Image (cartoon, rainbow, N blue to C red):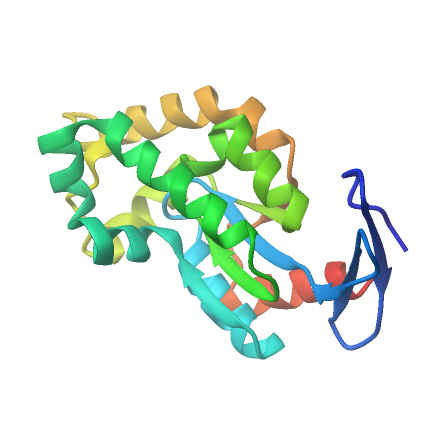
Length: 196
């Protein structure tokens, strides 16, 4: 058994990958599992596979924002990063009110302490990690060349810089290494942790 650490919540671990959250007033619901980490760490792939393994609904926050507000690159270009971060905060509030989700967040979403606290209050957060070299290789392999934060002459240096900037924020979450591992291996790792 472990406590989420938020007033009014206590946690009971049942078997078979199900964590039940006993909320104030005695209501019972399965907590959310939230995946964060830098771009290219595998959040979407791992999140989708993890949701399938647990029989839960998968939500990719970037995909929801694109569906509601248009391409992320266009949001950055036309309205600025602050507008994009506002969309993230609004979506975090919405998703944290739901239960039994597997949520893949944008790489910078949980850098915001208010968003991090909101997701931590509704479930368990894991940070998928990858080296700068792995990150660049995965982004290139996916054919994704329009990432606003990598629109620079030296993307590798920019990845290292951003990882350093975000290291303290990411450190608050349970780290799950992804370098040299398959999606199935990463999912198995997370399943062992939540069933632990």
